[in-house]
Length: 392
Image (cartoon, rainbow, N blue to C red; front, side, top):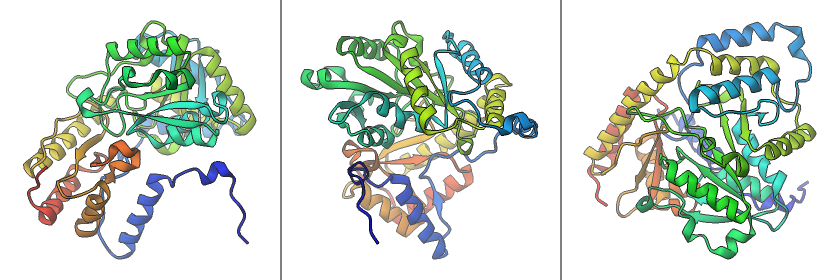
């Protein structure tokens, strides 16, 4: 028996990485040694002191009951302490921080808090698919704002039609950026705050990669800038910083009203994060931070190998200052899809088509740095043997 799907589900496109996982599984079943530069999932182990904190608290029967939907106060205090140390941002842990089952969950659900059917949400293109996915599930209409290399992949607020801005209720921004690796500075964030204030728009800043950076660069927080907490919130997690993607724990911080609304929604649909995991995340946030610098040194070496290798094949790429992604144009004569399919079929290497992040990603692909450098070198050699030197 086939049941009719709700319209909100029918409107959703297939999730990009679910399709990639199926393609990879098919190749592996065929005996192909697949090298994946696709999904950005840290390949190093979670730091030992975080795992030990989990073990300790998992043995405490007090943590075996329902947690608070908004998170333990002690966990939210650790988030506030991290913001103070990292960005010199003051947060009230009781009213300006809410725990999340990873930042992805909160990014999807914030649309449910503020968007009614037919409302407009501003989404960067290319951008993380969950920004539009959450809005579609809320019955809203994404308005895709093109971001281009000529502008450093920063949103140009002056290009957003006034009638669209007046309708919009949420603006998603994301720097350091997935998939492009672009970064933003003070002038951009001040402009974003001014734009949001003028049109009464809630800014939702996805800061998942704020601590994956290179060459001495330290990305700022949106919340550092005057007026930020009046108009927006920031989503973050321990996933990328401490190699904890599978632990599913993060937070939203900033505007107290938005934090409360998100917590109220969550109290009706989930029962919060296992407390032992919250204790473990707090151990990461408040514990020794040398692991972050060491991990970034590993990613930087991999970045250099990948970018230098691609440039030797004909690309002309700059090295990104942050994230563990390289955003690259596909060679002349290929589309995003045809190039990624060729590389998978002929070289056994997985890369992500840029169109998975929006129409404006056409002509590009994304490569992740989350495998050992030897495998990156092997992937480059396979690509060289498959397509040789390329032109653009």
